Image (cartoon, rainbow, N blue to C red; front, side, top):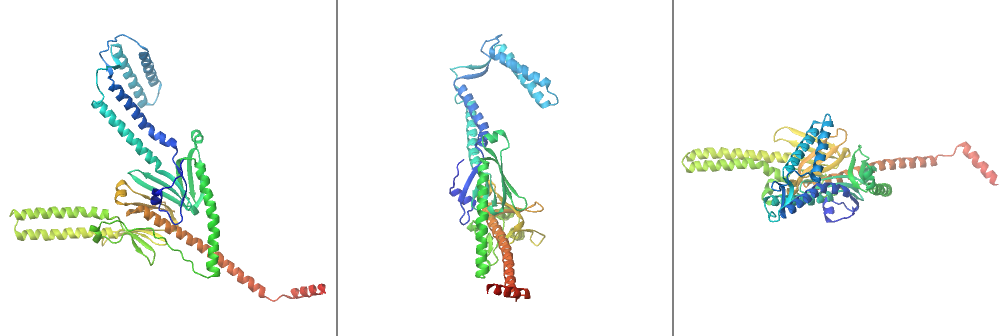
Length: 495
């Protein structure tokens, strides 16, 4: 299986500083073959049928004048008919299959009778031109559709990958023109990796699944029908061992250097990877920055994508415009007077403006907040009830996103945050650039986990300081009488 890196990977995976791809595995080639087989069968059958008809081929020809002849083909039909009917009688308790077998037997009996009375199942009339008649054109269209399905299936197979970098394991599923989903586990959160071939055939062709188990809350990432699962397992575990060895030593050395020798406070900076959503300039007066970023507290605040505000404003604006046009026509036709027209238009405009203002405020009140320690989902109606969900970054088990074809066109999607304990998920619905939102939350979680590790190291350093101070104090205590006597004995021995 090819192991490759190109610009699309770097764009879709939101590479961090110093991150690089180490290995990629895909679904096994057998999966592609199995998915392409129906399309291939349709193409071959339609192609053969169209070719047969193009040379004058006919089916069920009644003008063959071959009555009362029993050929080898008829014998085969009779045997198949007998097997189908006999099997139908022998089966018990499977009504659907029995009816199907009896139906096949009935059709074969009719075909035998047709051939016995002079018909031919297949015949060729060279003088008949059927290359581009209606039926053959339909067959060609079916072939082209099956070919398009095959091309789509190939790209869908090629875009389904398990990717190992020097910092993460990423399951990247890109359903062409439908949706794009990513799951990821940081290397420092991987507890174990299982590779298994479940069948004899899978073992022989080196196809199985890879299960990456997280050390946090029992979360697991499973990649089915992978090519060479044992190779992927070995490479992931090799990277985990290297990361644990080098990162542990480097972090402790850095901590000792800063906190012991230079007495510097620990500073963990969040990497800003988010960009503002591409709001049309015509609508910029309606929207605040999305996301909003509080640089002092390192807090991101997202709102739903601008597309959904425009969608919610479409109804009040349409009703307002249609009503104003109707009132205007009524005024021009002298159906209502000028005063009555104004009396209708002013309240109508005010109602539509109030309706639109309500929708705008409702859009702004829906907020998705990321802080250095937690995520918060706020849903609030204008001047009304409020629903607030929050979860600590340490409780997040899985961070994924999904985007439909329209979401990918307009740049929005849903971000799902699975939490420990309840198993429920916080969902950031219709946020702009969901892939970047996912990367930012993952970056914050990485920094949060690192800060916890730093705190554990500081506790260790405090213990070492206490031990050092205690040791110094013990060294300053005067020797006891037994100690003095022992010193005198040593001096005597030397003399």
